[in-house]
Length: 302
Image 1 (cartoon, rainbow, N blue to C red):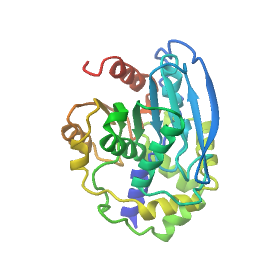
Image 2: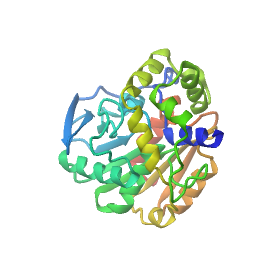
Image 3: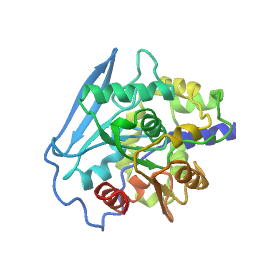
Image 4: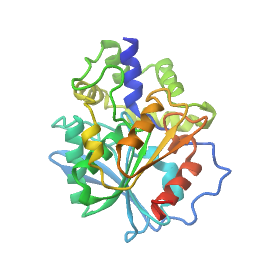
């Protein structure tokens, strides 16, 4: 039971808007546009938000399990002046809500990502993802190298953890209850596990995260019932895009050693780690992590 509770947190990729790290210089310029729309795919209405100039290089960001597109607000504030940033709520998450067809398996999410890019008329883009979102991003990059310019992985899922490998782990009743109706204590405990420094978390963001979880509990459970982590080595070796891996050194959910394994397995990858930071660097230290992303986007060899 305790091991599966750790698994839940490990694949959750819970991400919070940072209320710290604001002393660093923010974005150079305000985004030229920002709008939200819904795109329908086989009965599912996917919430999509676009920020930045329409003709700028495209950066697509994928959030983690149980979260929503707001998890990337800190990067958008700092990068959207120069990039067209596209975020969306994964099926069964945020305001997209449950999928009528229950397409929650990792490979189904890779397919959904491709269809969404088609619907947005995006031929090539840089992909970024945190935790479970990173897993979807690198799997897409491995299967469709012709469509990925660069890849950014933030404390990304990849290798087996907590006994999950080729087969899913049964979802314990207590975990199901937590996902469908989290208690105050359970929610606070999970937040404390995600972040190395809880002073970076605002109460407003806590409320937003919890509100975005409402109505998605059954979808979260269905997601876990299909979640697998088979050996990623062959797929990682096929990634052709220059890859930046960002990792919090105090990540309590996905071991830091997996960051080095990823960097070694992906042919053209480099790793940046952050002391004193947990599972979601884009949230705990948005200014510093966004600056590393900007340098990578401007010159992936630097």
